[in-house]
Length: 112
Image 1 (cartoon, one colour):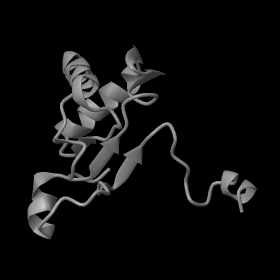
Image 2 (image 1 turned 60 degrees about the vertical axis):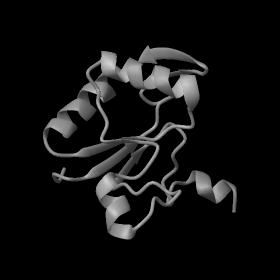
Image 3 (image 1 turned 120 degrees about the horizontal axis):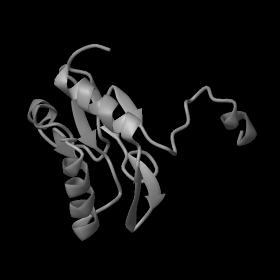
Image 4 (image 1 turned 90 degrees about the vertical axis):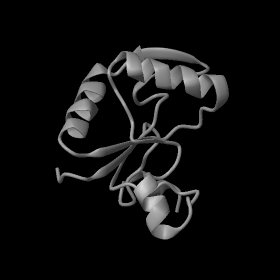
């Protein structure tokens, strides 16, 4: 993986088992992988629907595992500066989400 890749990662169902509004068991393999990638120059964005106290709880939970983010629910500061605003769509090179579907995934044939 290239240094400086931007990785957007979901929380519920991805970093942990989905138990919203509670927090489920951790996905330790993913957490350790993301920590390693960040140490090697990748940028991490926590990309979640959580807000308020539920978002705060998720951030603290991640910190307890030593997982830090370069941005939370917004684009990286350098991208905001470059483009002059913070688009609603988070820019990333890689999106990690339990609800993700790759555009050429066979599941899409079912809904066409």
